[in-house]
Image (cartoon, rainbow, N blue to C red):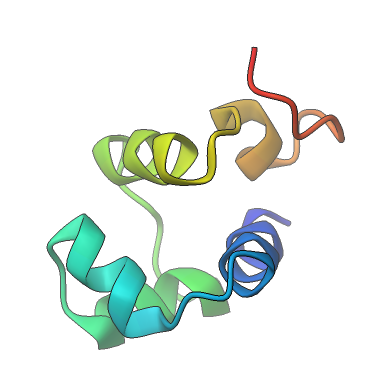
Length: 70
């Protein structure tokens, strides 16, 4: 599921939840809920995450297993 993907991407990039939350301009607890699957990610933040990790929104959403940005 996509919340596991954003957790994996964050840890693979050696980033903290606070760093990602700061990039997204949101509260760390809000971002933590995205990772836990307790809150849906707004499209605007999904796009920002894809840009941050240089991947596609499809990869984050689990629609592809290819992390390459296309």
